[in-house]
Length: 388
Image (cartoon, helix red, strand yellow):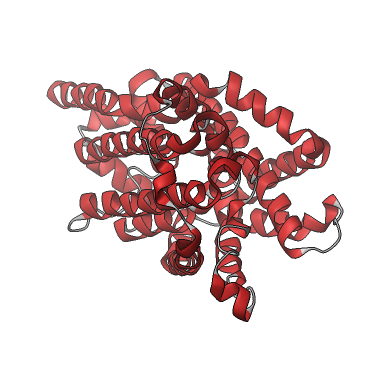
């Protein structure tokens, strides 16, 4: 008899089932930690190649294309918060209760692929950014083995350990951002962002093609039913995502305000956006302090999709040791980076041009439907309690 059938027979409610899952997996996340996770890890992955791509597609309106993706993610996160409040079960339990074990594993297979594909461009971008920023000569691909070892360690951690990491690293993201942005303000001409919607017909197309850098609500999908329902948890999580969104929007706007028509040629603006300051010219590039802080947070940020890919694979295969699925995922990404690094532009173009709809459906479409699935599951459980 399945766990769900036992739940129906005994008349346990959703909250009890969620509590059992949480106790089995250890101490739950705090809502505060989820908010800090959003601030620590979501912005930095948008500071690499995303602004250049958006500027190529829609020029000075890149911030609007970014805003559209942010609003879609925000709506998805709100839907998941209502899902958690309404039923309190984990993502897998909801799927299994709604459509059975096979259905749940098929959906998790989709997320396994989704997270691996989401991770690949970020790993390439971070490695190339570090190469261009920190190395005087081009390093070999194997120079980044320590990075992948670190990523493997992060992917082997429990979710609560990622939460504790977020408690610290959000300060590094915020401090690094403030240093870089304060130095860029002097050389920015925000009038370059006007007129708004001059190329408005391309904004929706651009937002779709940069959606691969977003769909971050998929992370939260694997956190529902696993965090403590403390006071103001709803507002804390929304505030955390909103703060991350503000950082992304400010950086996107400042990027175009600094580089204007040259924006589509700047692959890694994070290393360039602050160097035109008169302070830098006078005392040297101490902006690297902020850049190093953001690189520090970029390592776990780029490992985050691999972390959740390993969790999805663990659930699908039934492998009990997390480090095994983490190793499988990290090795897959490492081999992909070694083989396809020189073809990054072609692969990125293919992902942006051909897979954007699939990414939106998996990354945001499923999260937006979860309240309806939770309603159906809760109805089933109530019927089971009535029969009992």
